[in-house]
Image (cartoon, rainbow, N blue to C red; front, top):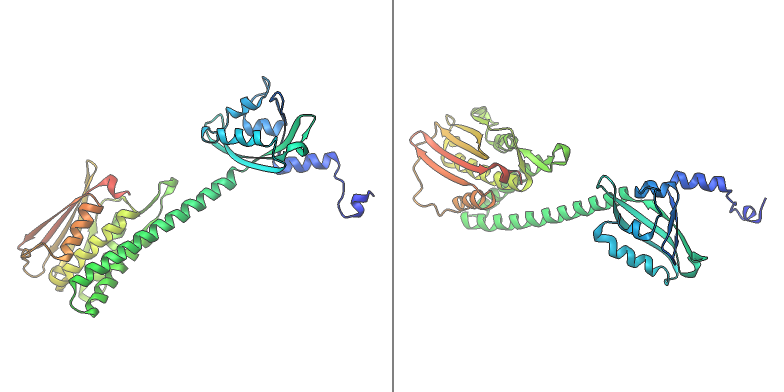
Length: 335
């Protein structure tokens, strides 16, 4: 038993060390600081995807480093000649398949790390860790962006609702309904297969948001939805939810949904990159065009459709009921 073993620190034999290095995926390297030549073990050549056909130099390896990291890595390696103590630097390399791989170079700087003008260290593949970090950063940024948008939207809805209601009870009711509609739309947004982003199905948006108007007594079964099967992006889903809610609220107050005999048909077609959705009310009271289009509900609808969804909205007050036609760009809905 050696002194180290007595102290609880066993001496690892070369075979044990080689086995541990291989299991950890560690690549060994040496760098001659005078002539720039590099030596690596088999794992190093595999990691960098370089051939053994010609001499390996620092410059040859540098050509594999991602252009955005190259100057930073060169400077860091040069600095190890004069900076004492351990060092670690993470950078990207481009593989032969043009994929990005993250490498972590670790070693000891200054005289402590240089023996006979040769510096030694290790390379580690840290791609998985870096991808996880990037994913967390993207998620944090997305959550921050989403919260800011929702707060701004809630503030705007509060201001609009306060100007269009006459009592605090009415304001609370309308604002709660609008925010609830946004919440339902938000719940529908989910990841698509193949990393295509987040989306809700167009039909699900209409069906779920109109369900509260079609689930009691004589109301049951009088709302029909038949629209193209397509995804709606998170931002557009939020705006479209407001549109649906405003149209449904107006119908419940003045249109087909205000009487037991009224029906609502929502249909849509997709052609030449444009989605046309018809909101058709039948069997309700006689409708007439409003005296003015300056109401806050009208402004909200116009702002959501033309501004946020980059589309158009048309009204037709027919004797049998209101028909609203929405024309929306397919590529805009996916956002």
